[in-house]
View 1 (tube, rainbow, N blue to C red):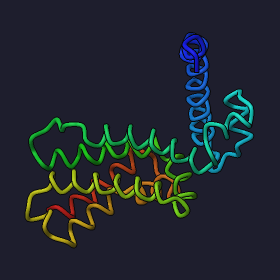
View 2 (cartoon, helix red, strand yellow):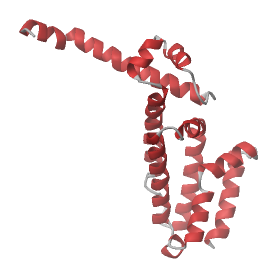
View 3 (cartoon, one colour):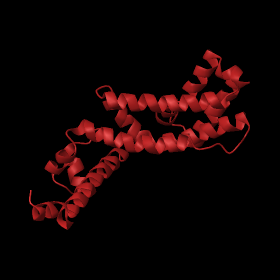
View 4 (cartoon, helix red, strand yellow):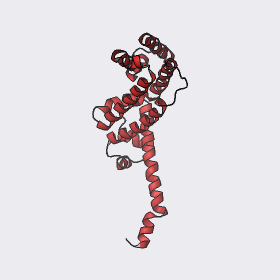
Length: 198
């Protein structure tokens, strides 16, 4: 490549193409997030393209298949969740910290319920989604283990029961199948936790 051609390939035109490409990719991911948030468990590529206002070919230029788009979406969501879950506690008392965990997870679960349901549909066929989910669960368990006093954290029955009670599955059952309000679901979890830690 000549010097002039090299400059042209790396000059303003190339920078503009790169910015457009990055913008299109961000719009595609944002469109996917919006559709899932609105209740589409498995949005079609065509629907994503329409929402992102790009061509279908552009979607597949950035993502080899829909699974890779789900992985990108999952990475965005889990990145936000880890920040929320690992935020420093306000209280030095472990019981109050446990209450903080309940309320923090309630807020997180409300925020990601639609994405979690979509991820559950696709996780069985994606090793990366499985790994991200396992890492998220492990981080939550680690925070819980560090919060509880040693005699509870080392009690396998009580620890696993508490971890189960704080899971998305329990929250989803309370909010979805049992139709409880967010406030009532928090009350139920906190009441059950009292019996496990006392």
